[in-house]
Length: 263
Image 1 (spheres, helix red, strand yellow):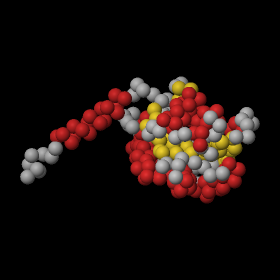
Image 2: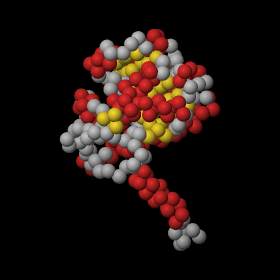
Image 3: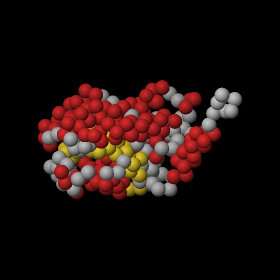
Image 4: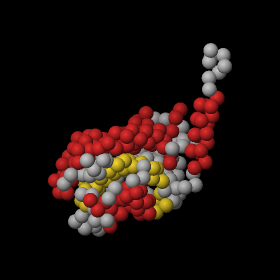
């Protein structure tokens, strides 16, 4: 995508972490940006340190009425959105599936998956009608391989974003709209704090043990958009679990049906 022709980017979870990193990378390229976030204090802090090319709106990505209100406020100032970044998310709750709490599972899916879906149904048709533009959905490496205990709800929500994005890519391509899927590894963000603020449970410890700088991750995302990449990764040392998963799937195809069932 040629960002020089981009009019207006809308980024969820944009007041911190990867979302803010993406916003800063776009601002450097002259793109006007609306960041949406549930944290009013974080929004105010960011808006106080950037110029007039950045605006902010409060948004709980689970609430479709808020999405419509946010769209109206954003486009009233900067015009139609032609770059949508569905980034907002919360952390795993640290519970095994057999011990999971329905309200926690639903909260994770409500933000990590339905938040992405709500962004697409709010802005997708308008971007498609423009005949250009781009949609970036942020999932996780946990959406490509899920081999860790106590991340079941989180991984399932990210797998769902992967599948949704693959379908969206096929649907938008004939209309000149690009789609990218970002699957970051460990990035230094305030994800645990944001999760706690909305009532989410945290895995033991509740801290991010380091990782890639969020500004670097944001720049990687924007460069991936510019190159027209579908898969955008930030970690390149976690391919072995993905390789094992696909080798097991291919082995199942190669095995074929049992002889006594094949007829």
